[in-house]
Image (cartoon, rainbow, N blue to C red; front, side, top):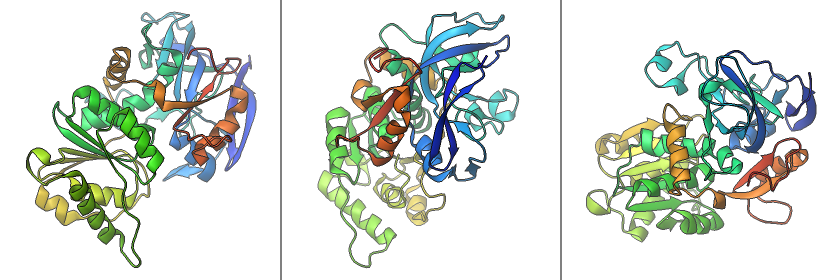
Amino acid sequence: MSDNKSFVLQSVGKVSYENHPIPEIRDDEVLVEVKKTGICGSDVHFLVDGRIGDLIVESPMVLGHESSGVIYKVGSGVRNVKPGDRVALEPGVSCRKCEACKTGRYQLCPHMSFAATPPKDGTLARYYRLPEDLVYTLPESLSLEDGAMMEPLSVGVHSVFTQAKLQPNQSIAVFGCGPIGLLAMAVARAIGASRIIAVDIVESRLNFAKTYAATDVFQPPPFQDGESKIAYSRRSAGLLKETLGVEDRGDKAIDVVLDASGAEVSIQTGIFVAKVGGTFVQVGMGHPEVVVPITSLLIKELTLKGSFRYGPGDYRLAIALASKKLVDLRPIVTHRFTFEDAETAFNATKKGKSEDGKDLIKAIISGPGVSVEEGV
């Protein structure tokens, strides 16, 4: 059968709709009828550039990986979900046999098969199959749209809780006020952070962050003529400290710095801002090589960590935080599109604005035949 309407990236900048075969499921798998899918920055990168680092689109690929849906069919060995259940999809299937998988860090599996990462097809389709343990039943308090937001929220959980190990009454500075940065701030607030500083070059994003989860905001200054990036970052860090009363040690210091922008100057500034003995976590993907003020990192004895996707327990914690209303997802979703308008949704996400000029934070695309109002 081929009633599986899919949104396909054909090549750089070129997309199409195709009817693909309905996936056959194994005994331990489920077939999900996809209802809601969020657009991620990685999806846009593949559409615009055809690659992210060494991950290159070499053949047509279905886009999308932030999804929720309803169980349509289950394999004979499935016990924990049934047809009709509303679920969030964790879109990466690891090998389950390697050292990373065996030691509880399956996000680092060298054989990871991840939705919409070449050559694996993504979730912007009518149906998608997954192993039983990678779908999570949604409590009644969460909508299908909330379910699609579990993927980016899990990235926030992994970076702030799992990697940074932020504790109640600690402070955090988050560089980049896109969806991941905002959700990281929301997780920090749910944990009980005493201070949450949002940093971005766009004033409207800072205004949103202040109403959403941040206690303080900072807009970096413009470059001066002839100023190097590292000199600029040092000056910007000094201005942030002066403006917000941040110090290198003590109660006014920043315990955790998280960069969700991927920008070189943000990474540099964050290292200059972090407290002595503090933690710096990199979650944003930008240029693959950057200059780092290594001496500052050294003499502060910073703990420097990468944060890649999510691992064991992150989805369950994300669902718990959202279902208990400790994280409010609704303000993040600013735009909704039908499946037929998926290309318009991608163009709006790329521009950061819809055609009416409204700022876009997160766009959600409904599944084939699903209205934008259903599951909100």
